[in-house]
Image 1 (spheres, rainbow, N blue to C red):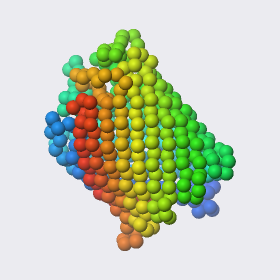
Image 2 (cartoon, rainbow, N blue to C red):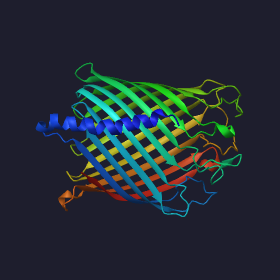
Image 3 (cartoon, helix red, strand yellow):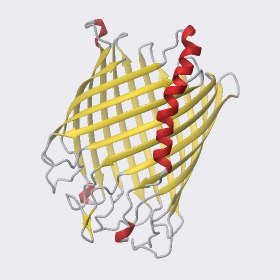
Image 4 (cartoon, one colour):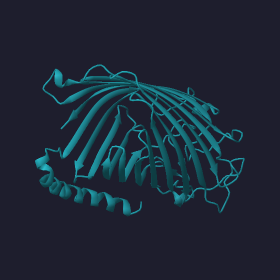
Amino acid sequence: MPIIFPIIVLTLLVVAPCQAKTAASSLAHKNVKMFDIKFTSSFGVDSNPYRFSNQYSTDSREYLQQELRAKILLSKHWYSKFSLKDVQYQHASDWADSQKISAELAYNKGKKRQKSLFNLKYEQLDKTYVSRLSGGLSSYSDTQLNDRYDYQQLSTYWSQQHKVTRSLDWRYKLAYRVKDYDDFSTINISNLDYQSVTLTNDFSHKITKRLHHIASLKISHRDYQDKRQKDIKGEDLTNTELSYLDSTLGYEHLWQQTKRHKLSASWDYMLRKDNGSGYYDSRESTLKITSKYRLNAKTAFTAQYQYVDFSYERPSVQSTDTTTEEYSSHQQHRIKLNSRINLRRYLPLNAQWLMAYEFVNEDSDKSQYTYKRHILETGLRFKF
């Protein structure tokens, strides 16, 4: 793994507390909260942790999830964030367990409609690669691929928002990401590393106090460092490096129906072109409808429906390669239900009781990637 990632994280960990002390002395008279810490502990049941099709065992598994988030105000405009998320499934094997950490340094300046934002973030994920094609762990040349999708990632972005007219805002954003996966070059398979640059333009138009809509255009270029182009039949082309160009159009309509009820509907359309034969050329359409209802100051509910239609422009190719996760043409329906109840009204605790349910139904042109999944979760979130 590149040494730059640990160095950046160490710098954030050392510099942030020092800056926080300075900020605390300068902002204390303004009664500003310097630290915001949240700890969430949840218990859940997952009907299909590995997203297996019916041809493999899809027994339900219970899991415990712990998440710690902290925000530290460094100065008037600078702050840092840290998070740790650990998921442990109650099973003899630990295939579905995962751990994720992140550290972030951010800058925020300007008024509500004329903001400058900067962000630098490090992220690390540790999980086990389980092949949905074979229904279990994979190996290649006598080497286990359990860490195939473990990664470290460094990302940064800068955005600027402008008030164009009384009712129209324009925001542009430039983002860069470099993602480093575990290295399997010793057995001559791609390590999947890539870097990407993304430019986004958003136009937000306020129709009335309760209605506004957002149109967006996003262009992204992704360069792989060790991944081959493929011919139209799916065979690797030697001495090539793969890259993508993604173009995405988006539209979102938001409606404040009442003071307590918000509705939103969004649609995104993505078109991808590769730099080779067109094997990876694809399109994706996403529809999302969200309803948020606040019963009172202590209780809120959210319901969301999402539909995704992803398809390649080439005929389907049946692969037997279990060294990577195959991405197939598919249609996915997803329903999410969430609620939170503030317990401070009933108990001497600054805590929320959280409940969530999620259902996923995905149909694929490859039978191994067709699955259904139910997730039911409840837990407590403490604020300090």
